[in-house]
Amino acid sequence: MGRFTDMDDDEHRLPEGMQRIGYDADTQRYTFRDANGNLFESEPGSRYGELRPAGFETPQSTSYTPPEDIEERNHAVDRNHREAMRTMLPFALLIFVFLLLVFRGVNGSFGMRADHGTSQVLDCHEGGRHIRVEEGETCWAIAQSHSLGVEELLGLEGNEDVDCNRLRVGQAMCVPV
Image (cartoon, rainbow, N blue to C red):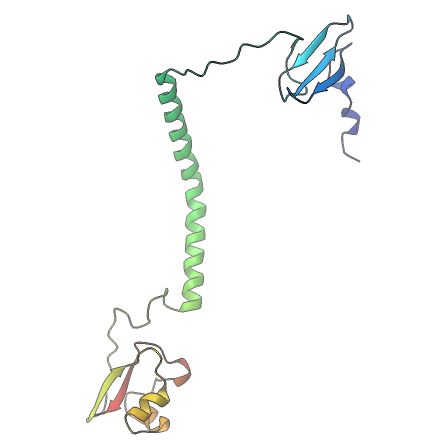
């Protein structure tokens, strides 16, 4: 049961002597009768708005709108749009920063390759050179292509920080010449 069920009936909302007697679904108008028997209609879609005598039509607005009014309305809409954007901007900025931090935490590099834009300097031993890991390569494939085992590849000077389980595209590694 609702909180204000005693206010659901018409006697609390209508003037003394007025009674709602019908509803026309086609025109969406309620019909009321006063104490003298006069009939009144509500505005379309309004249950308790202004009442007017039944049978009298309200003048319909013309479809012609002067250009000055249109321009005035356009300026009002633009002002409201700017105010709404100004209100929403701090929240959008917070969401953007939050998503940026989430991507940073998940990816570790904002979606770019970790070595993109920076040159990783390796000090390979004499007789060695550095290569960049390409997509699809593994430590085993790199070691086999240079006639080494994985342990020998990781044991070369300059490969101390290489973790084969976390090998990234573009990562530098030392290999023998």
